[in-house]
Image (cartoon, rainbow, N blue to C red; front, side):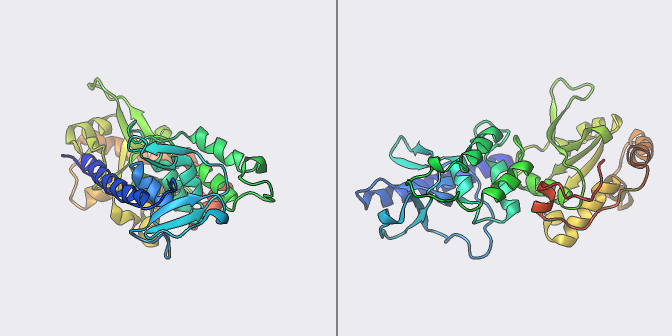
Amino acid sequence: MDNGAQYSESLARLRTRTIEQCLEAQRRTGRRLVFALDTALSLQGIELPRYRRGGLLADTLHAVIESNGVRTILQGICFVLWSGPQTHMPIHHGRLRCTDSVTTWAMHANRLEDEELVVLGDSMMRRDGHMKKATLEEFRIYVDSLSDLSNYSGSDRLRAVRGVSKMRRALRLMRENTDSSQETRSRIVLLRYGLPCPEVNYAIRLKGYSHVFFADMAYPDLKIIIEYDGRHHASRWLADSKRREALEDEGWLYIQVTAENLRDEDSQRELAERMGTAQANISRFESGNYNPSLSFLQKMAESVAQRVSLRLGEPVRLCGRMTIAQIADGRRKGNRL
């Protein structure tokens, strides 16, 4: 079983356990519960985000209510208020209900850091059709609906729910068809240091291969690809030496990102510097851990100098680490490859 399959299996096990817990809770009350937040994510088989300190309580189920007037006490259940528009979906042959993925994402806006809200949104729009729960347009339509107070429960609403501006910022950075949350975090690292947003899951046709390969991220004009290599990564084709050599022979530069690169700010800046100077393969060659083909060595010398230096007219210089708000609002000071 590959790593991607193992990760899908772990989500399936969490989903099964959560269904059992929700069924037990539903049997203890006469009211129909609508599960929300991380409970809804688990019921839908969506990866849980990284909550900031003091986040949701572990081993606690969450259910949504539209007003405090219907709040009740039920052991093991935390009721959360959400007066904004809601769409509910059936789970487990209709025996359970939960908020759909887009509503669940919006309810997380004030519970997650900006970056993790982007990560959560991406996780709901996976390239794998079985894991794709929504489209970017559906997120946009929902966020727009939050500005119309007639869409809220009750008639005395004076303002929209908190977090709409934060949702709009996240929308500008979210991308469809990614394969893992670490890919999203890697992409955000590049953006934080002023590099432009790479294309995600970029299709590459190589000579001698009948099928299309997908790179996690790419700067096609510079022929640079970035791949996240982790335990849960479903796409491991770049590990194949023959395919990697075919990429190199066609002039592609390859940069590998691991969990170590995302560990802290110093590691993230080092990654951005590697990306900005396109030196990852040079470093691996100098360390003795990589034996590139002769054609790659020739192309590397030409492409690094020409694609980066000649295109920009100067070496790539990174800006200071930016916030998600600065990136989303277009206040970047960095490079445009």
